[in-house]
Image (cartoon, rainbow, N blue to C red; front, side, top):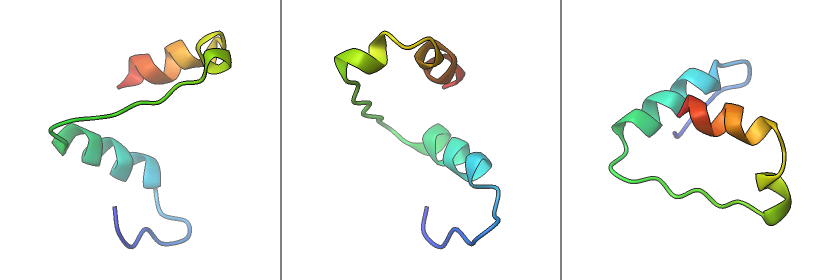
Amino acid sequence: MDNITLGAEFDARIRGALKRASYSLFLFTPGSLKRPWINTKFGAL
């Protein structure tokens, strides 16, 4: 994830890095777990 330039499609690079990762660590606050967007974002992974 080094050297992401201004205007780059960082979303695709992040998704690619997550696919190649052996492990992922997600941190949530109690408030964020109650938000409707969390299911959309977490479900996309």
